[in-house]
Length: 426
Image (cartoon, rainbow, N blue to C red; front, side, top):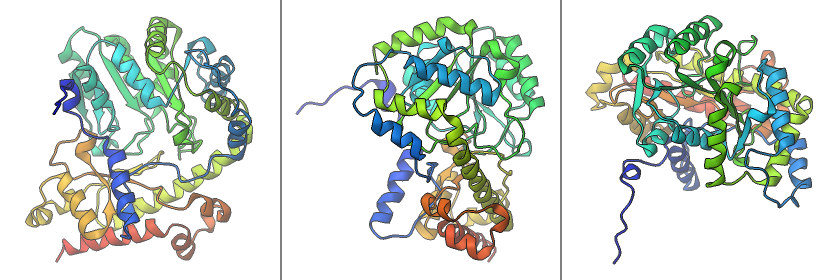
């Protein structure tokens, strides 16, 4: 019998927590068990019709496309980010990949220096760095600041690391908290990043899912020479399975793009041609998609605010989300009573919620928080997207009856969570 030897850097990894909880919840549902699936952040809406049509019309496209991406798509992405976000990236500095997740991995792989990750942040940044053998430096943030990285928190870590090159990844809006950085916070962070010459990856996959009605702010506005922006089709365009992401690099970091193209040429070569043509429709004819984006964003805001209100009513601590699909409540107010049930860690509490209350959520420890942190990430997208689109008018028309009709799993899941907290008070 052959026992294969594996790369030791791989042996320490586990399956992505978000993908694992999704598969577990779906398996339980397939077995007939009711599960309130708050563990996975996938858009429930159908892909806009014009994007689907473009994919069908270009199914015959079979040739390898340029490593960097279809030139017309790179141009459309450049124009889109200029018009929608006031960025100044030329098409020559746009790169297309099979999801922003893969592009971030490629970037982390080719760059030297430790990876600074504000905690909590998306689950995959750390494991991607671990595959490279790169030092991962979590930076603890505070609930009272909405879990947004503050200048003093970054300064302490950057100073301790000295003059070597450092990478900082900022997810804005944030997964798992839904937080959105303010203009003042970004200006402060930009000054510090410039002083330490930190290279920033600004993961803006949720940039079009914001609830503040203010122009999107990014480190790319205040530190353009050192900030790399990533995005893609998966969230606001509701096309996660299309697996198309984009990366925009400033001209000052052209050396990174050249290296990235070399790495891509030896790995995935190029993104599927039909998918790139579909993305060209999404970015190039965005006005056709805008009504869909605005309507779905309003729905996301409603579900986020509904769940936030229910969490507060249940006695949880939870910053209000300014964007994305997520909320990050914690059970600290119940810590002593939870401990009496033998629940000591975030993993314990999430396992308990799934086993006894049919609630699937992810513990804070999956997002770089300490094991004993009692925070958990809840996604607010467990509903029938097509049904909601067909029935939705606006948030002002929503009452208790309509909410139960359109979002039954969200309502029942919050009921179950509230029942759990009541058991802690007995």
